[in-house]
Amino acid sequence: METIAESILQRMPGDLRQYLEKQSNLDDIKTCEQEPANVASEVIQVGTSRIKVYFPEFLPAKMVVFLHFPGDSGSIHIAADYPSAPVTGFRQILTDCSAIVEYVRQRCMGQWKETWNTDPARIVLSGSSAGATLAILLAAIMSQNHELLYGIIAVVPLIDTDPNLAAGPWGKNENTIGLTPRRLLADLDAAFRDKDPGFRVHWHNNPRKMPDEVMKKLPTVVMVLAKLDILYPSQVKFKARLEDQGVNLSWIEVDGLHQVKDMDRVTAAGRKVRQYILEASREFMKRAACSRDRRPELVPESQREPATKGLSPYNVRRLREL
Image (tube, one colour):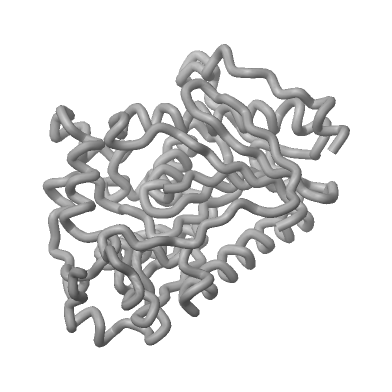
């Protein structure tokens, strides 16, 4: 088995160290992600992607919708399953996820609004790793069309997607495990293969290049940073920029690896992150219950990207039977 660098071991919590000593492959650390139990759900095809919608046990006065991009009762949670690299490139990934967001927005203005009191201005985008990157980028792009979102939950986000710029410096986490420099650069190369440098560094694809005037329009951001992650230095800089631009920001940093969110059954850091995300989600829900509805002031249709057409209609009658 590959050894862990002493510089990483010295900073690693005891429970994480004990867990890793039992693993046979440090390049592919097993995580503990599980499906929610006994929760009503529906799988919906959206273009080339699928979403799985988890419905609450009760109907609050103002519903908050959480749309999660991977890589609590009283709200609708949606998990998106979309083609990722190396199956497809980043441009297509962003397009597919944009179609998912548009689909959810349409449902929140239509069928779900009738059944669940939803509103497109009460959607929270969330994700981890590259999924957190997509949540940040999509929220920024939507803000340019005055399409309001309720917030972003970004867990260990990838801030710099340009393979040339992302190649360091990694700081004291260069010899970390889980997400290693070699694996990260290989994934980025697959996602941006055959793309010109201008595409790689445009802020639509690279949060690090996001202009200040775009960043300051972001909704509330909840951010999780992992101190043993190679992405940690770039996340710290991005967090500082958010604070400088006056973005409403809540954040936490823990002694964990890039996969910390999915290690809640084996590490205290993982449990802390899970609890923090749960509390942040509840805070969004409490804020919705105590505030007036915000109505989106949309850019004229002729100036916007066309909405995705030909999507599968949602069966509201089944919702009423849940």
